[in-house]
Length: 222
Length: 212
Image (cartoon, rainbow over all chains, first blue to last red; front, top):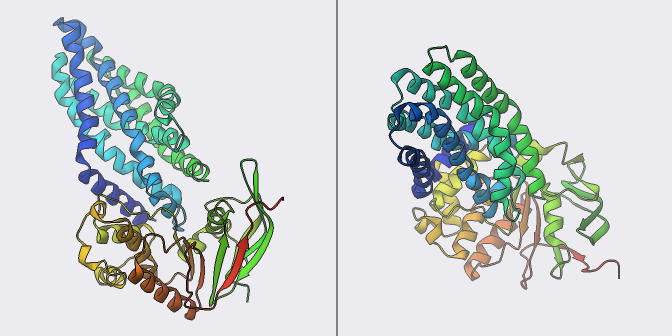
């Protein structure tokens, strides 16, 4: 089982490296969206500090959604998904492998980039670290929940828009907890409760989403 | 001993259309089943049902006497399916394609057997090329090389396997089918081409419109 998980993750990372352009697009999108705000809002430091967590988090949600379309669509188009389905290996494990690779290529770099981007908003050191910590704990849930939407809309016409409408509302609790964690740390309070909720959401999604995705994929491929 | 693969009272509807009804047959070890029929007669749907990719409207498929929905793991390890889509990644090389497929299928192939599989289908010269730069026929051969790699799999389900293959490709595939059938495997395939079967074949004709 672990072997299947690693095999799928390794394959997706290898493919990601071969299609570096697509990966770079998502990360550039994240950077550009975040950088647009200080340019548009102006150099009011207090204002920037206040809006920073919300903006970084919304940009992270949008980048996650942008990258979701490719998660299963390519494997579906070239028949690899069929092969995974009939391989006799547990589908939910293979799915978890794909999502791990997706997170390593989107959530992880976004977390690292946020440390740099916080400087555009003059965010002090402690809230910056909290922002990165909240992204680290929350982005796995973005990949997991988003994958459910991607699996459900696989092969549908206009699936890209549909997945956005389907998944964004589900991201709301993650967005709120992420932004609140940074805000409370900026005002000198402990961000721990919010971070714990984020971690809990990710763990819960990791436990449940693979089953839902496996079932959705079986239906989508019929 | 129960047959390797058995279809019991299969009925398949796609949309409003009835493709087939009360279809029963069995394939024993050492047999080759050729499913024939016009376009739209339901050959691909039948093969997908036999693989477990598509649920029949009613009826069931049994593998060694057990319904395939209950024995998914064991059946999957005993099955190789080559469908219309080759399952080949354009960004990976031919040998990477086979290695990653085998790893995901739970096999642990050594580099030697991957090379041998590619040689059998005469694409070893292109082993280091990205599959995207190869022709349709060569990609087909990569897909078919899986048959060599999963040497323990007894059930082969092949959907139009001769498509895009040249004369030598057809010969190599015939050779593979012959060897599998003679070593107690079960091969099920569809083809539109005038196929000179290398082994004794049972023919199943699907009718395009069973209600008329």
